[in-house]
Image (tube, rainbow, N blue to C red; front, side):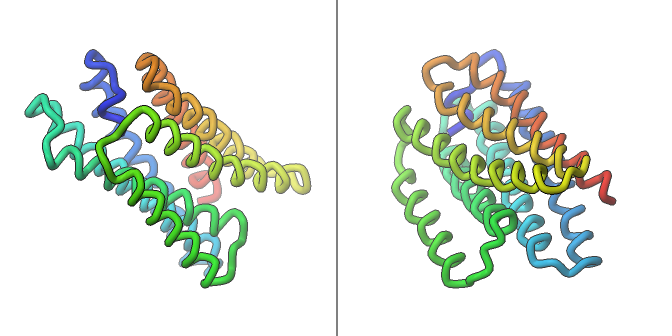
Length: 211
Protein backbone atom coordinates (compact mmCIF):
# COMPACT_ATOMS: atom_id res chain seq x y z
CA UNK A 1 0.00 0.00 0.00
CA UNK A 2 2.56 2.57 1.06
CA UNK A 3 4.75 2.67 -2.11
CA UNK A 4 1.67 3.57 -4.15
CA UNK A 5 1.02 6.53 -1.81
CA UNK A 6 4.60 7.78 -1.76
CA UNK A 7 5.34 10.97 -3.76
CA UNK A 8 7.73 10.28 -6.64
CA UNK A 9 10.30 12.76 -5.30
CA UNK A 10 10.33 10.90 -1.95
CA UNK A 11 10.90 7.37 -3.32
CA UNK A 12 14.61 7.22 -2.54
CA UNK A 13 14.14 8.80 0.88
CA UNK A 14 11.17 6.50 1.49
CA UNK A 15 13.33 3.43 0.91
CA UNK A 16 15.93 4.79 3.35
CA UNK A 17 13.21 5.37 5.95
CA UNK A 18 11.92 1.81 5.44
CA UNK A 19 15.40 0.44 6.14
CA UNK A 20 15.51 2.52 9.34
CA UNK A 21 12.01 1.30 10.30
CA UNK A 22 13.19 -2.29 9.82
CA UNK A 23 16.31 -1.78 11.94
CA UNK A 24 14.51 0.06 14.77
CA UNK A 25 11.67 -2.48 15.03
CA UNK A 26 14.23 -5.30 14.90
CA UNK A 27 16.12 -3.71 17.81
CA UNK A 28 12.87 -3.50 19.80
CA UNK A 29 12.11 -7.16 19.03
CA UNK A 30 15.59 -8.34 20.03
CA UNK A 31 15.72 -6.34 23.26
CA UNK A 32 12.25 -7.61 24.11
CA UNK A 33 13.39 -11.19 23.52
CA UNK A 34 16.41 -10.64 25.77
CA UNK A 35 14.09 -9.37 28.51
CA UNK A 36 11.82 -12.40 28.02
CA UNK A 37 14.74 -14.82 28.38
CA UNK A 38 15.69 -13.14 31.65
CA UNK A 39 12.23 -12.58 33.18
CA UNK A 40 10.20 -15.35 31.46
CA UNK A 41 7.08 -13.17 31.26
CA UNK A 42 4.62 -14.13 28.54
CA UNK A 43 3.75 -10.53 27.70
CA UNK A 44 7.42 -9.90 26.89
CA UNK A 45 7.39 -12.87 24.53
CA UNK A 46 4.40 -11.49 22.63
CA UNK A 47 5.95 -8.02 22.69
CA UNK A 48 9.04 -9.44 20.99
CA UNK A 49 7.02 -11.48 18.46
CA UNK A 50 4.83 -8.48 17.64
CA UNK A 51 7.76 -6.23 16.82
CA UNK A 52 9.50 -9.04 14.93
CA UNK A 53 6.41 -9.23 12.69
CA UNK A 54 6.51 -5.45 12.26
CA UNK A 55 10.19 -5.69 11.30
CA UNK A 56 9.33 -8.33 8.68
CA UNK A 57 6.52 -6.11 7.40
CA UNK A 58 9.00 -3.30 6.76
CA UNK A 59 11.38 -5.78 5.13
CA UNK A 60 8.52 -6.58 2.73
CA UNK A 61 8.13 -2.86 2.01
CA UNK A 62 11.85 -2.65 1.24
CA UNK A 63 11.43 -5.44 -1.32
CA UNK A 64 8.40 -3.69 -2.84
CA UNK A 65 10.06 -0.28 -3.03
CA UNK A 66 13.30 -1.70 -4.44
CA UNK A 67 11.35 -3.55 -7.13
CA UNK A 68 9.38 -0.43 -8.04
CA UNK A 69 12.47 1.81 -8.18
CA UNK A 70 14.28 -0.76 -10.35
CA UNK A 71 11.46 -1.44 -12.83
CA UNK A 72 9.24 1.69 -12.43
CA UNK A 73 6.12 -0.49 -12.27
CA UNK A 74 4.31 -2.39 -9.55
CA UNK A 75 5.04 -5.91 -10.85
CA UNK A 76 4.11 -9.20 -9.21
CA UNK A 77 7.01 -9.03 -6.72
CA UNK A 78 6.06 -5.53 -5.64
CA UNK A 79 2.36 -6.34 -5.28
CA UNK A 80 2.97 -9.55 -3.31
CA UNK A 81 5.39 -7.69 -1.03
CA UNK A 82 2.82 -4.94 -0.41
CA UNK A 83 0.18 -7.47 0.65
CA UNK A 84 2.76 -9.32 2.77
CA UNK A 85 3.47 -6.00 4.51
CA UNK A 86 -0.24 -5.50 5.21
CA UNK A 87 -0.64 -8.99 6.71
CA UNK A 88 2.56 -8.86 8.78
CA UNK A 89 1.87 -5.34 10.05
CA UNK A 90 -1.69 -6.14 11.09
CA UNK A 91 -0.62 -9.44 12.66
CA UNK A 92 2.17 -7.65 14.53
CA UNK A 93 -0.21 -5.08 16.00
CA UNK A 94 -2.63 -7.88 16.93
CA UNK A 95 0.11 -9.79 18.79
CA UNK A 96 1.06 -6.57 20.60
CA UNK A 97 -2.56 -6.36 21.73
CA UNK A 98 -2.10 -9.81 23.30
CA UNK A 99 0.80 -8.35 25.28
CA UNK A 100 -0.59 -5.00 26.37
CA UNK A 101 -4.20 -6.10 26.96
CA UNK A 102 -3.00 -9.27 28.76
CA UNK A 103 -5.10 -11.61 26.62
CA UNK A 104 -4.33 -15.03 28.12
CA UNK A 105 -6.94 -17.31 26.52
CA UNK A 106 -5.51 -19.22 23.55
CA UNK A 107 -8.95 -19.60 21.94
CA UNK A 108 -9.40 -15.82 22.00
CA UNK A 109 -5.94 -15.32 20.54
CA UNK A 110 -6.66 -17.82 17.77
CA UNK A 111 -9.98 -16.16 16.96
CA UNK A 112 -8.38 -12.72 16.76
CA UNK A 113 -5.63 -14.02 14.45
CA UNK A 114 -8.26 -15.68 12.24
CA UNK A 115 -10.12 -12.37 12.07
CA UNK A 116 -6.84 -10.72 11.09
CA UNK A 117 -6.39 -13.26 8.30
CA UNK A 118 -9.98 -12.68 7.15
CA UNK A 119 -9.44 -8.92 7.01
CA UNK A 120 -6.26 -9.35 4.97
CA UNK A 121 -8.07 -11.72 2.61
CA UNK A 122 -10.61 -8.96 1.97
CA UNK A 123 -7.79 -6.47 1.36
CA UNK A 124 -5.88 -8.93 -0.85
CA UNK A 125 -7.00 -7.31 -4.10
CA UNK A 126 -5.76 -4.39 -6.17
CA UNK A 127 -5.55 -1.58 -3.64
CA UNK A 128 -7.95 1.35 -3.69
CA UNK A 129 -8.24 4.54 -1.61
CA UNK A 130 -11.16 3.01 0.31
CA UNK A 131 -9.12 -0.08 1.19
CA UNK A 132 -6.19 2.05 2.31
CA UNK A 133 -8.50 4.22 4.42
CA UNK A 134 -10.09 1.17 6.08
CA UNK A 135 -6.74 -0.54 6.70
CA UNK A 136 -5.07 2.44 8.36
CA UNK A 137 -8.14 3.34 10.42
CA UNK A 138 -8.31 -0.28 11.61
CA UNK A 139 -4.65 -0.32 12.65
CA UNK A 140 -5.10 3.09 14.29
CA UNK A 141 -8.04 1.73 16.30
CA UNK A 142 -5.97 -1.27 17.42
CA UNK A 143 -3.08 0.98 18.44
CA UNK A 144 -5.62 3.19 20.22
CA UNK A 145 -6.50 0.28 22.54
CA UNK A 146 -2.80 -0.06 23.40
CA UNK A 147 -2.57 3.69 24.08
CA UNK A 148 -5.57 3.49 26.40
CA UNK A 149 -4.05 0.59 28.34
CA UNK A 150 -0.67 2.31 28.65
CA UNK A 151 -2.34 5.55 29.77
CA UNK A 152 -4.03 3.65 32.60
CA UNK A 153 -0.67 2.18 33.62
CA UNK A 154 0.97 5.62 33.61
CA UNK A 155 -1.86 7.03 35.73
CA UNK A 156 -1.38 4.29 38.33
CA UNK A 157 2.40 4.15 38.39
CA UNK A 158 4.56 6.74 36.68
CA UNK A 159 7.74 5.35 35.11
CA UNK A 160 9.93 7.06 32.53
CA UNK A 161 10.11 3.92 30.38
CA UNK A 162 6.33 3.46 30.37
CA UNK A 163 5.87 7.13 29.49
CA UNK A 164 8.26 6.76 26.54
CA UNK A 165 6.32 3.73 25.30
CA UNK A 166 3.04 5.63 25.70
CA UNK A 167 4.42 8.60 23.73
CA UNK A 168 5.67 6.18 21.08
CA UNK A 169 2.30 4.51 20.59
CA UNK A 170 0.50 7.88 20.59
CA UNK A 171 2.79 8.94 17.73
CA UNK A 172 2.09 5.66 15.91
CA UNK A 173 -1.65 6.24 16.39
CA UNK A 174 -1.40 9.75 14.94
CA UNK A 175 0.82 8.48 12.11
CA UNK A 176 -1.72 5.82 11.11
CA UNK A 177 -4.56 8.37 11.15
CA UNK A 178 -2.55 10.65 8.85
CA UNK A 179 -1.72 7.70 6.56
CA UNK A 180 -5.43 6.97 6.22
CA UNK A 181 -5.86 10.28 4.41
CA UNK A 182 -2.53 10.31 2.58
CA UNK A 183 -4.20 8.85 -0.53
CA UNK A 184 -5.75 12.27 -1.14
CA UNK A 185 -2.69 14.35 -0.19
CA UNK A 186 0.56 12.51 -0.76
CA UNK A 187 2.53 15.11 1.19
CA UNK A 188 0.82 13.69 4.27
CA UNK A 189 2.66 10.44 3.56
CA UNK A 190 5.96 12.18 4.30
CA UNK A 191 4.57 13.69 7.51
CA UNK A 192 3.24 10.32 8.68
CA UNK A 193 6.58 8.64 7.91
CA UNK A 194 8.44 11.05 10.19
CA UNK A 195 5.83 10.73 12.95
CA UNK A 196 5.78 6.92 12.80
CA UNK A 197 9.57 6.75 12.91
CA UNK A 198 9.58 9.06 15.94
CA UNK A 199 7.11 6.70 17.61
CA UNK A 200 9.23 3.62 17.02
CA UNK A 201 12.39 5.44 18.17
CA UNK A 202 10.63 6.42 21.41
CA UNK A 203 9.66 2.79 22.05
CA UNK A 204 13.18 1.61 21.19
CA UNK A 205 14.63 4.16 23.61
CA UNK A 206 12.43 2.79 26.39
CA UNK A 207 13.66 -0.77 25.71
CA UNK A 208 17.30 0.33 25.70
CA UNK A 209 16.79 2.19 28.99
CA UNK A 210 15.46 -1.00 30.58
CA UNK A 211 18.43 -2.92 29.19
